[in-house]
Length: 114
Length: 114
Image (cartoon, rainbow over all chains, first blue to last red; front, side, top):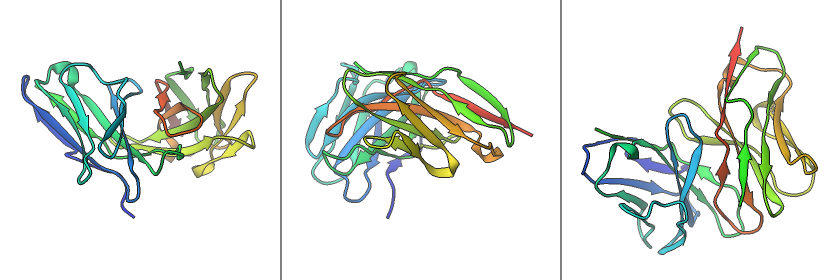
């Protein structure tokens, strides 16, 4: 049973480019969470999605960031016009159902903005 | 609003010594509490969790934690440290009930020396 998969594992973008981060949840999981980890800090919640719905985006910056979890395919975290401050590790987690509290984390995507 | 405080960003113990990593939380509702471990350049792995019931919970790799409501604490312990325990440890809290975001502490880096 494959775990949460994220790709790419490492992503380098120049300032002003777009970054797309992908997350495939564990089999049977329909809830996806995105977290950001800045250097030397803990993880900060960004957004919580179910299939085709954004449930909680209270941690998402209001500009340049968007997320989706389509009916088919992986969840995508999109960052437009990246800036150096976006450099971080982005982790995706998934859980099974709405009454499931246990989140399983992927290996993360490390974004570097040059 | 929920919050987590981890006292001590770095803890160093000798191999074979007791490990004690501190976590205090703040929550307006009965919390679910978690400890995660992160090895360098990897994702987070769940060590243990408290939801309801027994306040002393046992996890993987010989770790355990005790939920103390009166002290709003959920400290992580292991009787005898092993070199392989060297990693970053994160305490997290979520609201009870349905799936929801995790709020993480800033982490404690555990060093194990010979």
